[in-house]
Image 1 (cartoon, rainbow, N blue to C red):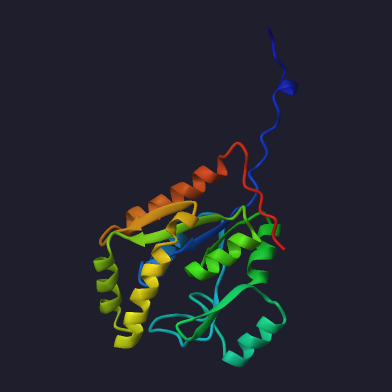
Image 2 (tube, rainbow, N blue to C red):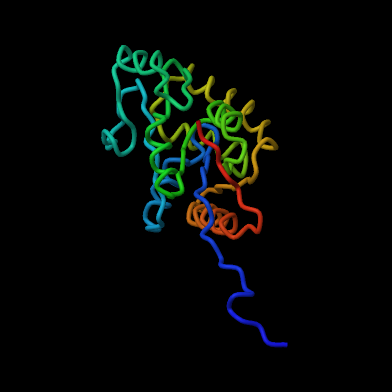
Length: 210
């Protein structure tokens, strides 16, 4: 029996994804994000606003949008953040404009946010793709935070305790990616593969973003 081209439905492009990349402090989210950017995929990387001061080498508008506390709270009052929260005494938030416009333009959006923020985004956009980065062991995470030497002893203790609580929420995410010591490239490749496979779903995720 002969078929014409009219019998074959046209394959439409997959709708844009909202990708939430999360994990405890020190797990390697920033390093993974830098690696993902080098892949040169057609993604938009939303930049988080924060009231914390920049660390050595960090750039405004690239790593974070560094804001005065007063400015941040004015944006918060105007509901200009998709989600925001106070973490370790500093405020962090994802500007809605960073996400809304890119999704409207058909681009996949990648958010790097903490576990608390990821829970908020999942409520606002249940079809968001959530990926949790985890360390191979608690000892590895402790060593990374120690080597970073950017926190005082009390702050370090608090981050480690918070990490335990956050890792207990891994089952709330769609995927888990292990970032082992010396295995960052593998973790980046796995995140890339997850996003690629999600774009091939027969029934795609359709993000309804408010």
